[in-house]
Length: 478
Ligand code: BUP
Image (cartoon, rainbow, N blue to C red):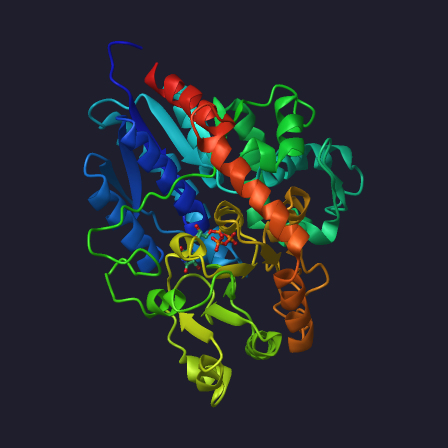
């Protein structure tokens, strides 16, 4: 070091759950005066992604933008794969061909690489060849990182069952036993595209210079101790807990903060929330990638109404964060919207500024799919979670959230465990009961308040995440 000024290149993946923490780290480095460039993949997956990329470059004008045009993927090679996993595969293959030339033509020269976990096994060999330090950004819980780290070892050991492609419960050393029914469902089939990517990334990450995780030590002490102590993988790279990451979106003067689209549209939600009493509102959102079946949506509607609580429900009827064309009134049935409006129920669709919403004093609890970004945003706002896992890592996150005292988990509620979309229906009565329980749970509210303080301590000067971020930045500057 010394002679070459630091210039970090970020290689983000797709999906808002991956992009949000990535953007937050990018903005954090940029605020510390580090020269950052970001690989921007074209075409984007959704309007939300495009808006967030454009917003990042507008808010932080010194950040460099390096466009990468996605190479086409021969879809006939794949059958019945989730569109997100296909996107990741296209990204992975594009990176193999295009990242080298991108780095070669960068000015000033790239001195450090930070890649999203999904691209790890493609990026690290390139970084190694160019002798560039490479860190991996892991966008979900440290508990899930522990599962990720251990999974290939589990497969190697669980012979002959795993050799035959049968995956059972995975007992992660120093963490807990994850029952097979709570693993990310694609992992149960070692021939799935996702599973192959997952295993390759998990093996290659051991060669990284470090792993950045959006969490903090006090919320997940066990998996962090196990990873750092080499109990899961001997010689695992340093794990930098740097969360909860600060929001990267800079509110514009005169703009309302909550629930406002990037397009600056006026916010009904914002005005509505302002009229609700403190801690009275049940916020309901199942993230970007989950869309419930119509019959389940109607049960949720009935459950929220029967709970007697005020609620704000961000309803998605299409999978993946595509534009949602369905009319709410058609989905929910005649009269529902008008009926609940009178007693403090608001249903909206599309994108909301969730982090700002959760910080609103009217928020009482969050019925959530269990995306880790969402879980941390709730904890930081002191809002208890009721986790209803939908897919992927959500059940592992739910286990982590319960252990951390930041939420309750509706363990017996259906999820799309086998990907066939035919999970059993949860009735409106069950939903109403559980919502009432969590709203009335004083012990849970108390432990969330403690977690909120711990989160604030972690990022304050001298805190664990603060120190880890400094150490990471110090390495980047070398
Ligand atoms: Br939906 C939605 N507004 O309307 P997760 C999400 N978000 O700000 P994911 C909004 O996107 P999976 C919206 O605050 C969080 O930072 C939200 O990340 C934000 O899960 C992020 O919660 C979503 O980790 O699903 O991506 O929905 O976990 O399955 O990848």
